[in-house]
Amino acid sequence: MKSYNPFVELYKARIREFYRQPSRLFWVYGFPLLLAVILGLAFRGGGERPMLLDLVQTSSESKVASVIKSQPKKFKIKQSDQATALARLKAGKTPLVVVAGASQSDIDYHFDPTRPEAIATRSSLDDTLQRAFGRKDVLSAHDQPVTEPGSRYIDFLIPGLLGMNAMGGGLWGVGFFLVNCRIGKLLKRFKATPMPRISFLGAILASRLTYLIPDIIVLMSLGIFAFGMPMRGNWLTLLIVEVIGASAFAGLGLLVASRARTTEAVSGLMNLIMFPMWLFGGIFFSPDVYPDAIQPFIQILPLTQLLNALRAVILEGAGLAAIMTPIGVLVAWAVITFTLALKIFRWD
Image (cartoon, rainbow, N blue to C red):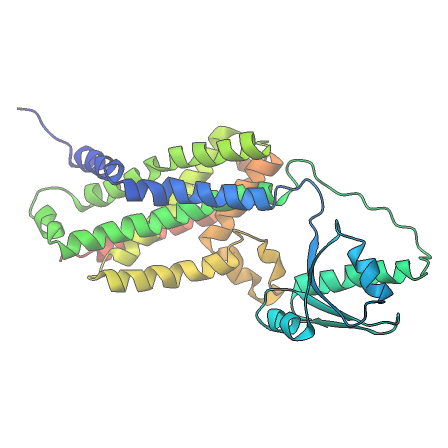
């Protein structure tokens, strides 16, 4: 009589279940790929993009307006009356409204000083106008734009999306599956079998880690072949980092779902856990922009350490010895959460 290993059979069942649901395939692989393509096209580099502004010309003889209109490569101008322009500013549709009169001194800037885009546009426009009307710079500076692969935003973004997918797959994929099994009374049936608890939870964890391989291949191929992103590290090191990071998030998913009985409860807990990491983890921008006082909290987050390690491997060519700190934090998260999940897991 053929014997069955519960871990192996559950693992095979999870893999088959996943690939038989096209919607899961899209959210796990298609959505991050689509996001990478859209953001990559927007921030791939290749020259300065025009800055948006609204121009209100109160006099047909305005020399200021003429200078602004003569810079179509530098400024993207929408011309309208003052009421319309200010309404667009209040709605966030434009960062800067310029009201230009007949004389050189008759010019007003309307903008939100807390909006970085507005400050940059106002500064650039004012510099252009000052030079056009005779200002001479006493300091000669030379711009040296950095556009080589590895230093662009798209190179920063791809590792962020890898980490984001590992987080989402580990938390939502594991947590929702367990809660749905509990709602459908499937966990009680599993409990009635001689299968060890660790085989059940281990198979769920192993299936999540398996899904990482296509994810890494798809996103890294997009970055390398479509956008010229460098891969300066070792592929095996990258895989090890991703597996450890995904294990940490899968452990969190197991822990959160170990007692939740409704999809509403697990959804709330998942969002509570993911929200700080979306804000502070560094998916789309560096967490260094936040105050030093909260940096210890940010650095202990598993997503922060996963992205630190991924970017170090991909963009800096770091080996395992150079990323032991983030790996240590991720291992701690994986071990602690999985151990707690085993202890408090409920079948009903």
